[in-house]
Image (cartoon, rainbow, N blue to C red; front, top):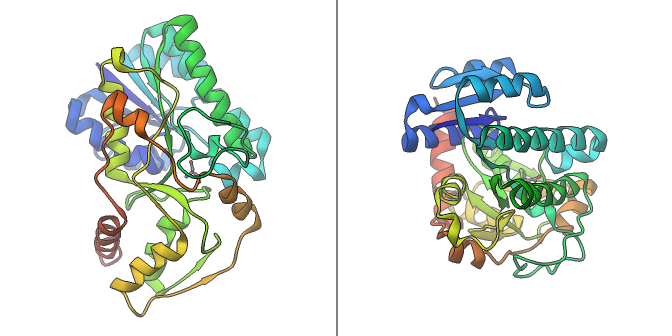
Amino acid sequence: MNILVVGAGGQIGTELIPHLQSLYGEDNVIAADLKKDNVLRLGESCRAITLDALDMKSYREVVSNYGIGRIYNLVALLSATGENNPQLAWEINMGALLNSLELAREFNCSVFTPSSIGAFGHSTPHINTPQDTVMRPNTIYGVCKVAGELLSDYYYTRFGVDARSVRFPGIISNGALPGGGTTDYAVEVFYEILKTGHYTCPIPENTFMDMLYMPDALNACTQLMDCDPANLVHRNSFNVTAMSFSPKELFAAIKSRIPSATFKYEVDPVKDKISASWPDSMDDSCARKEWGWNPTWDLELMVDDMLKAISAKINR
Ligand code: SER
């Protein structure tokens, strides 16, 4: 089976590609991205092609010519960027999903499109947010995620398309940077502290959000897609989390390792509003029960690993 990752140049795709290669073989993974420089970078270690996922004709040719059996659709404008241009966010996030689902139907592929904590809103219970609960998001990103979950489930029940997904929280990683997300602070802080010793945070100090370290996020992408579908009660999408912390807690963990680090807050009103509407902590028991989700990275382990990896990157 050949696997296509669309939007492969982003934060998740950049690390998902080698993860997929290690599991399914180097030649069975195709990375596709809209941006030429991403394709050049990805092409150093995998089969990489330029593709606009909104161009159905080209997308169909790729799925057909490469004999694709599984699609990871990672194309998305994130939450904060989406608020600057809601129409574009809808066009990109929904357009790429609809094309992916249609091609999955035509070519009998399985398809994974991440949902997000952004699918929840103010009226959702914020503590231990259940798998099945109120979903009335207040961002265009969240609106796309809820619509995407419904559309993916529709393609499953109506056409039998094997669509599965998770609601990712903030993902912390040391490969490609996230861009335009509300949870990005939890990545940016490591670079800023190691480069300048100081970080100015756009999120209020006591706002809690769920987070995952990238190795756990990658396992979620593959474990869910490889699990026996007979065990799935849900499909789109599963709550997954490994830790929940506030900026204050994350910065204390960094300061305990780098005592000279300094932090200040300059709250961004857009990000403040978005983060306040999201869960403080999600209940991921359905993912644990239905497909064996079992994250291994907590706050302390993640901080140690991030500091080590980013110091090495900066000093290279
Ligand atoms: N990391 C994403 C964002 O902040 C959440 O899905 O937009």
